[in-house]
Length: 308
Image 1 (cartoon, rainbow, N blue to C red):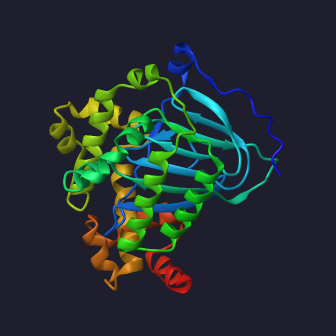
Image 2 (tube, helix red, strand yellow):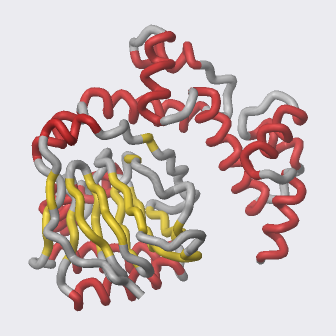
């Protein structure tokens, strides 16, 4: 039960905004054969932190109350609150909980990339109806019409339980619904969008895209730095500050994520998966897998098969 007094939302002043700790970059590995990704998580959870990513995020709160932070905006959330967050806009949701209180499921999220929408609109002019909605999302949007939120929640459940064209159809229904919504609040100020540094965000996205395309190779920090036209030592500091992780940690995280996908959705031997995702020997692969997942690859595959 929420006992949250609904305070008047506020926007931090320029000095307060620049004093905030730097948001970390969240790597969201793409889902194979899908342009959208549905996920849900609880609280506390490693995903709950001050962060940003290159994807749009449609975010529905299903349980608990607390504070929402979007850019330089601070407000309240409660069950049934719905947000659309644009690319590279820092955000976080902090629940008010009692000591040791846990919510197994708090958030339902759909993420999608701008490139997908832009590529599709070149051949499907009807998608230009989403332009205004996506432009507003660069500030963050909180939707405020109860009927719109209820229907969005229903459609998000459809996305969660479907795949392929059916899932895409439900997603487009959601976007069409939100594009017509006229009860909403824009969250972050225009000023905040400029002080975060568009050039730096472009560099982060360029680096991450390069890593996505080459993680299975013998990729090096020096190679990516050269691709961005930066000195290796400067790029190392820049990348860690932007993502919250060292370059090697970031690459290995992506490799392990891809390995998990192959362990679940393929019959490839573990040794083959090791080399497929970019590791050069099985002992190194096993060591990193254990560090990230706290279990061996074979145990992970076994648990996944039991879970169905």
